[in-house]
Length: 427
Image (cartoon, rainbow, N blue to C red; front, side, top):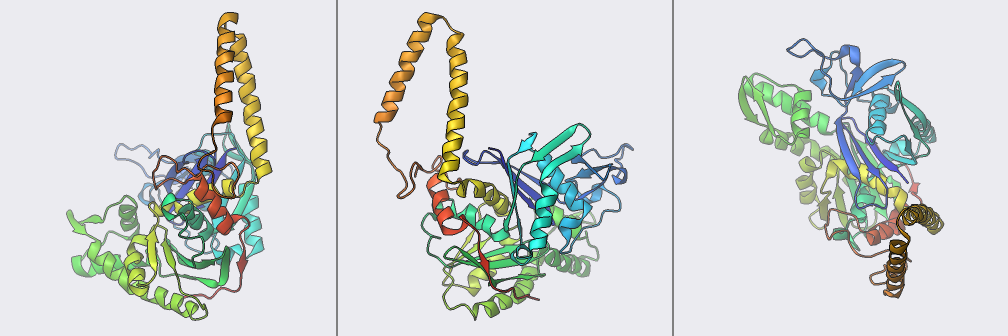
């Protein structure tokens, strides 16, 4: 089975793909900028930039996953109807194209809780992403199934599936906070329920922080690089920009803006928590802006455990990829195992028939011995109550997701995502 976890954000597109039972997915991150190829900027040599992925939108070639300065007349789509735009379609096609396969068995993506409750938005996204996609002439990818889940479920699945957090999130009341480029979204997860009346959203997000930073630089340095240059620097892991040829450290500007804008976000969350009659055990910080907000949440909730995803920008996409494995039934697994065994037997038979008879007999004896030894081996480390699931972590690395942890995460949250209540809106 081939699964693609897709997170099309306002700043970056994140995708994770592969067999959901493999050690880890392949991943990619692309800038969330796309536009017609005819609008691509020229290099100093007079030739057009040829970066990004070529996709075709309404019969015309586009480039997706390029930087803002590499295309003329580019405009960011910063609004709630983002999935209806040509830019979103182009970015989604680039991610669907990235694995290089002709067919994707399952594509999982997410919507903010407030949008997830709108059935028409879910249906639109499922229709948009499913079926045959002509990426460009001669390149077609078929997406057999699309699942849309509440976006925080991706991060929760990612974190709950990590050996470092085994048992931590089972019975905890968890606040998931996702400071993104367009909005800061949050939701309470308790006993497997995503509570819509305990969720919300604020526009005091990364884009607003960068606007404040750009204004501060203009006042202090009499020059400003612009929001898009600031965003590109952060996405590349740098906190330095050049103004009039001199490097400028962005840290004090970012810290000051984040401190100011975290206040209304925390006020909105505290207002929401007044109606919640239990303490917050764990706060999970995810998203590209999590590092800017983390210390402010830790100071506001000193009794709660505040944890950040090791790869916060990829957490939702990886969690979406894990979702299919977490919700797979035992019958599904048996069917997959039988198919794999059948294919392996055909391949083995072809190989045995291609070698001399004397060597064939020795090979068959060795295979039989190996099979008997495997049957005699005790089933050590099986997760309690989960038949046939190894409890061993994958390579002992806490950044990977153990099968036992995935099973626990499934029981905690994702057997069937549920959402209840109404959404308050923050400033």
